[in-house]
Length: 451
Ligand code: TYD
Ligand code: MG
Image 1 (cartoon, rainbow, N blue to C red):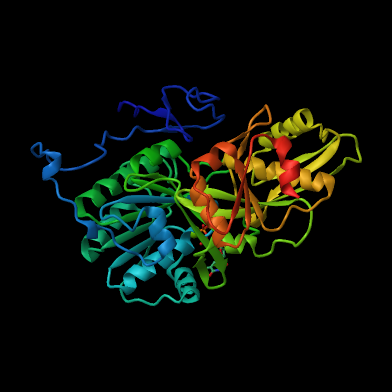
Image 2: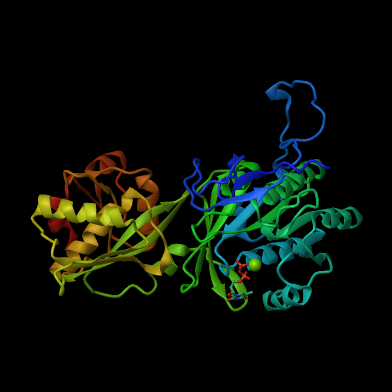
């Protein structure tokens, strides 16, 4: 009698393996995530080939022209200046956010410049992709479409076509025959990705993997994939808004937290070169509850409007709703206002929103949130030409944040005439012509400076 194949139970969220089924993963805490799989034959991840001889770091030459420019500037910027040959890039995001659209546009651009691109789709037919390509105005001889889900077949086609660029849309649909588990399981995703990684490094062909994000907001098998690939980009955005933010969360070839801003139009994703202008375009004039902050997205300053609506709660159960900013931060700032300024908002409904669907996680936004809440509470509009930034501490003190100069410059560029910032930031900044800088030490000083 043949011995039954040994199986393991693998957590589909983090890849933790256990010989027995468990309800809850001891590693990542996910419930009901274990699936029985046959373990993969051990593969060697990382750089392939035989080991060379040690070389002095000074003897290694860099070719500055190494990166491929896709000419989608926002995409190039997010990648750190273009696509690096042999890199494996994962693009994640919610379904329908625009992953296939973006990657098709990028591949179309490169194909137009003579790069032979292969686009493997496990989700859509060639006709569907062709229809999308027509909307995007892509027609290049060099863009090859392929549908299917088997990795072995893909490598066969690759050997014959010898592409300069490969797209796999999506990684969760592709499987290798070496494993019996279903496509999309952690085992498959890891195995397929590591084969593609080895191939990309061997041939120097840049490879893009599209990854779906699960309900919980993580790419299926997130840890497995994220440590394997060179670069992880996320497309974020509210589907009810047209803006899409491409964010780099891991990059072996550039800085992380770099963003690219796009707007979804009926002809695809259009680059937004000056996001501040767009985010402020529809700002209401002379209305209370609105404050503008210069926040930093990667190395890039972006001006955003924070809106607040504070009003008596009709039900005696005050509501706190935060869209685009941290919910706990609002509660904290409300407490600070009550204690330090005697501005009791405990019995008020408070809604805070970042206009345009952006998410701001920086503490520098604190002063903006506070200003918009005060403005709404008192029903007094903040001066239209004023921006504010700074972190607010529990004692009501206003603290300095990074790169004040960059923020001030952006505000000035967009025509703002006054900037409220922490005193420590003010001391570090040389006076700037055309914009008045006002340093404040605590939220108490806000009242005089804001209105
Ligand atoms: P898609 O790129 O297929 O999303 P994903 O691959 O991330 O699942 O499509 C995203 C949405 O964008 C889809 O609902 C239709 C819309 N869209 C446009 O608004 N304009 C366009 O030009 C295209 C191609 C799509
Ligand atoms: Mg898609």
